[in-house]
Image 1 (cartoon, helix red, strand yellow):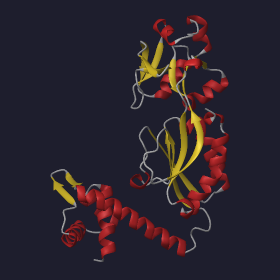
Image 2 (image 1 turned 180 degrees about the vertical axis):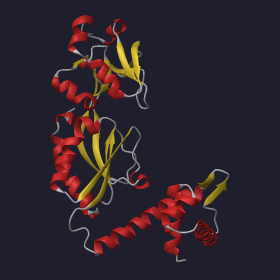
Image 3 (image 1 turned 120 degrees about the vertical axis):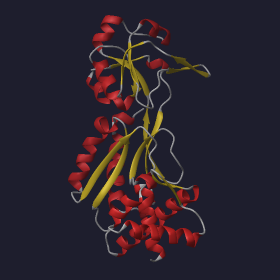
Image 4 (image 1 turned 120 degrees about the horizontal axis):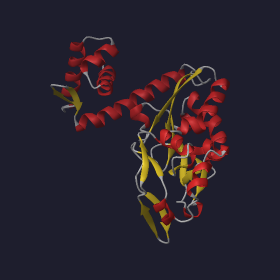
Length: 300
């Protein structure tokens, strides 16, 4: 088996986490896959896979080699596609990663407009609360709020988003409008318990940041549910401005304590390869960037 095929086989095992699953993906026997990995380890004089009762895991050397394999295989595929003229027009699967709630509040209309302009592209949207790993997770473009996960990608600034405390007009009419963070002691709040959302609320205070932990009357497993509860008048909620953009814009929620708001957080599009990126990536970047920059959710 050629060195290139050995790399393809190892990359498949690394991604699948199982010799049997990789064999099915490659349409080979498990014995063939095992021989290929054994030959690769012998050639490199190193252990790449740690075999155990629950399957296989990558050794430290295997982790590093798997990343190198993905880069080489991807670059080879891109070179072949470019030579075949496949960069000429956008087509194929485009995977875009977004923060939670960004799809509903901001991205969906832009995605529909892009697909209408480029009907040969299949758009796959992933939402998560973690930092995107473009190469490892097979992501073409990611919208990142906050610090960038690494410096290896190209980044385009979109604007800023801000933390905001808000409540429904009905709640404010009944419980009053807080004017300082200290007023939160006499208010009801709702919160999300999903990863990334803290029970403590941050407010700038001179040169430091003041931390408060308001008592909550409802905790939800998702931020979307917590925001919905706030629109029904259950209590105050703290969220990022884009997470409740539609509710704030329509008047279902009103921002309070704006004089005590934390600084804005940058929002950026990240991708790899710059101008050498495939047509579907370049077309999406060129199409979506001006629309996202113009969106009021990124006005800060």
